[in-house]
Amino acid sequence: MSPAPFPYKLVATDLDGTLLRGDDTVSERTRAALAAATAAGAAHIIVTGRAVPWTRHILDDLGYDGLAVCGQGGQVYHAGEHRLLTSVTLDRQLAGLALSKIEAEVGPLAVAASRDGLDGEVLVGPGYRVQEGPLPVVAFEDPAELWSAPLSKVFIQHPELGDDALAQASRATVGSLVNVVVAGPGVVEMLPLGLSKATGLSLAARRLGLRASDTIAFGDMPNDIPMFGWASHGVAMANAHDELKAVADEITASNEHDGIAVVLEHLLG
Image (cartoon, rainbow, N blue to C red; front, side):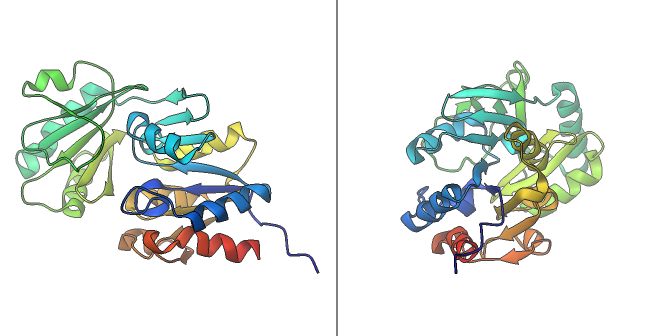
């Protein structure tokens, strides 16, 4: 008796905390499971909060040549062609207004921003705590520098409030101006209103002739909630944020223990 066909035509995976282990690598087991899923006819799309410049080197290292949704859904990137297919930018006037309103509510913030484009720089203001990584950032002192070129997103940190509390206060204050998401530890982002991983993934899927009903999605943070809402089946990692686990259809092993592979191997029979 032959095994049942793989039930999904699209496998959507978040990157940090999901596909990647803590050392930014993908295990051989997970690579093999994704390869088996694609051999069974499924497409694989990486869907990450990272903007293209902070994603491209990882995709190249993985030998990934398909479509990637970057920048929380704002960018659809063709990894094989190193080409940006779509890009949505943040209205800088609205973002500046939102920032001032949040600060009026909770006090001064440390701010960073990701500039638009294939080579967009990450600008970091005074006091902003940058996570260690292989890519450089550009420090700025003059706030005018922050708004001098198109941006894909703005990052905010508070000296005392945690990520969830800062995001909640920000949404309550400026939720009609911008989207505010928690994308990782210490990473609270302001995005264009209405933008999410779901909007970017739907664009990328449409390019492949695929639909939400064809899709299984894997993630670990609250910014993956819209993607789970769009996909037919959402799988949270064991290390996922409680808000994502609450809306997941299934919880698998952690990113360090091949959680994606565990699910795909079961589906592949």
